[in-house]
Length: 321
Image: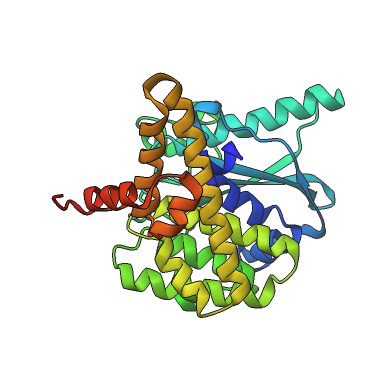
């Protein structure tokens, strides 16, 4: 559960693209044609390992797929950047992960033959990608070096998907993939009303394509992600939107609200050991009200009196007693 609290972006990315059908759909629609022609997508196999350092888990997520490239073993490596602005160190960071994959291959399979790895970088920040795709462009004065030297310098290029620049017409694939890309594209959208349009479209589409239990779990992952990424979005707004679309989705939103508040209470209780239990629970109630929860609902979850909760509501709104 803690991973859901701390890294909802990672969970949203991985739950979407670790689904082989969705990953395959992404590759079919977005890989360069010349690359697509030499990859066997019928045997696409997700790998369990991650190569991101612990201190960078809030910045990056990754997924590795095994396949065949030109009839020999190969891999497709997704690196997803969660930051709203591109990192200048991306080429070096990605090279480290590629080397980790190779080292693991050598160690596990006792081989000295390195497989092909095609690196893909997914970005969805507020600014467009303005960083070179080649490692050599990070090397000082590389283009002016004599060829006798450049042949000793390692180089590679990655495939970039800057989702922030995609138009609706450029977003392709099945419904789930289109939702994924549109939400990532618009999650940092400054215009609140425009984002709500994308959100409503996503909830409607998910209601149609995800009716089974797994779909409910994915919907929770989706809601947690948008609530984490949009500080201006209240849970009550999402609830009202879902209520008009589906009773099932409305109930899921309430379940999520319940979980979020209980998780907040657990954190508050941990702090309460040091600073007083009641204060931790009051902080939880404040957070719940900021997310649009009702007084009756918060009273039921926290056990605080209605009068106390009304006082907290006034405090949240900046009103005087």
